[in-house]
Length: 208
Image (cartoon, rainbow, N blue to C red; front, side, top):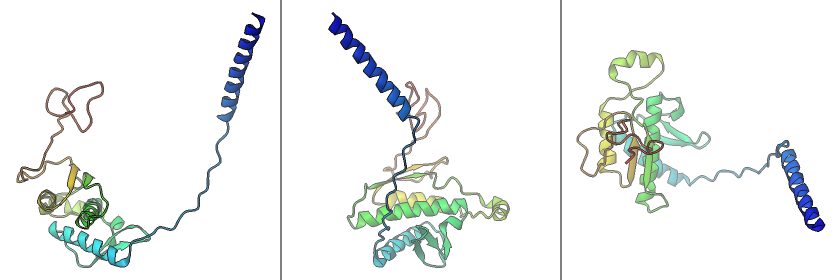
């Protein structure tokens, strides 16, 4: 009986010591691990030029004017259109150029049977566009807008020319002339009508 009691007391002491050590360990911040940064390996100039031509073709299909070549700024790791970095453009143009880059990369890889998941996800590529009647405000704020025809051309390209699958999440209604292969889902934000949203309601509800 004495040996059993002693063993239990020893076990409790061990647990108490573990708790003290864990509490002490939480007071220390781990030292950051410094790893040498490997230099980024870029594709060859020929590959980059081919990719940029793919992006330029997409922009032309959307009706976005280009007075100069599409280039890649390797230092900024971003597109340059007409000598202007993408980051310097208005938010509407930045968004559509980002979509062109994403679709262009997928198109380039799919056509050449390179590794790619075969689909892209675009979140609000068009929602920041402004109507032409707000041009004064846009110019004053340094914004850029494109004609509404770009919206139709964008959807037409994704619907009929893009070889992969595109999942587009937008706040605006797509054109009505999409083909039957396009699956358009409307999020109603109503629990008992249609699909509530991209994710199901917490605790159940209609998320199908």
